[in-house]
Amino acid sequence: MVLFDVLFVAVAVVALWFGAGQFVTGASRLARRLGVPGVVVGLTVVAFGTSAPEFAVTIDAALAGRSDISVANAVGSNVLNLGFILGGVAVVKALPSSLAFVRRDALLMVGSTALLLAFVADGRLAAVEGAVLFGCLVAYLAVLARSADDDGVAAAPEAAGPLDVVRLAVGLALVVGGGHLLVVAAVDIALAAGISEWAIGITVVAAGTSLPEFATSMAAARRGRTGLSAGNVVGSCVFNLLGVLGLAAIVSPLAVAPVGVEGTAWLLGVTVLVTVLFYTETTLSRLEGALLVLLNAVNWALSLV
Image (cartoon, rainbow, N blue to C red; front, side, top):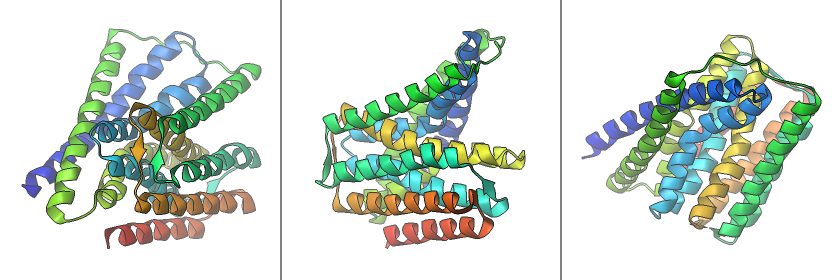
């Protein structure tokens, strides 16, 4: 029954959200206990933690032969991150930026999206193309980690114990289990409602897996750390394209329907727009944030028609 599938979606979303939080907490404390620099922890453990739902859902869907959901989840999560999340936070409070952030991180986001579009233009994302994407992510993290070492940035050791190991294991189990449940329930809903898997993937599934990014960005904005909100969203977008889709294609090459190519082209347009808006005044104003929210709403409406 559709009612049970909707309930399963809700349960899966809660499992993904709670599991990602526990994974990030446990892994971060353990990594810092080992003396790993804080910036490296943020760029690897925390970045993976907030993107863990996308990883779980995308790879699970790829293994199940649901390529549309795999691609739609990653692409849809990025559209939602830049539209509803980044735009929504900017509506609440304008987001400042810096030229360094635009030139390095935002432009990398644009380049990653353009590379993905070039790869999927032929209707598939091959294993070798996935390896290229994932390799780009590894290179990016290596450059940032080296920059942190050069700057002498280090994290103070934290007390970590058995409870953090439990958090790590439980969090990972919840993310993997929740991801599988979300894919199964979303496919059932799409079949029952006569909606394409792409449409359900870019809306329901993408919204569910983007909850960690939403929670992190809103929490940072409430504490006045608006720069962290922008960095979290852009960083997650890069991680989704290079890491999530890259690894999914390595595990199981993905067939990409024409609507997937169109969706990726739309995402490229949104990433270029966001980068330009940040670059013009190094600030994302409330009006510009409202524009991004509107564009996301239009994209959702067109997907469901």
